[in-house]
Length: 108
Image (cartoon, rainbow, N blue to C red; front, side):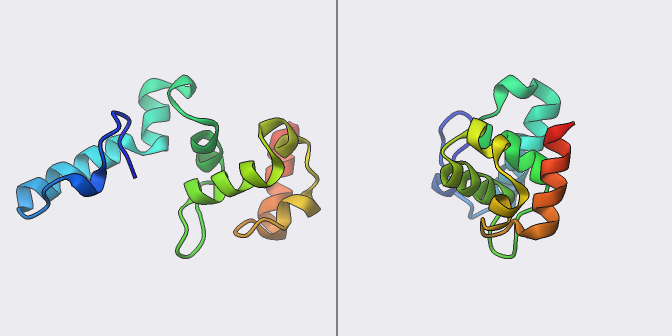
């Protein structure tokens, strides 16, 4: 995973408590929801915006990964927004309930 500046989270020295605290603070500021609030929609990718809308991922997979899977499965934003709930529900991590609520929110 990378920060907005292209730095790898895993490349930082995490041996001291201070380093871990700085890492946690930076990681929080780099999360899509926080960037949306501080920088607006233009600072986020389509995957990140979709992850914010999804709110949560699934066990072992963060919302950002599920969002990326959705965009790949449908070939982009336009096709994703045009997809019916049944098609959305076939994406791992979405399911019928989330597919129905997503369709409802995108249609408004």
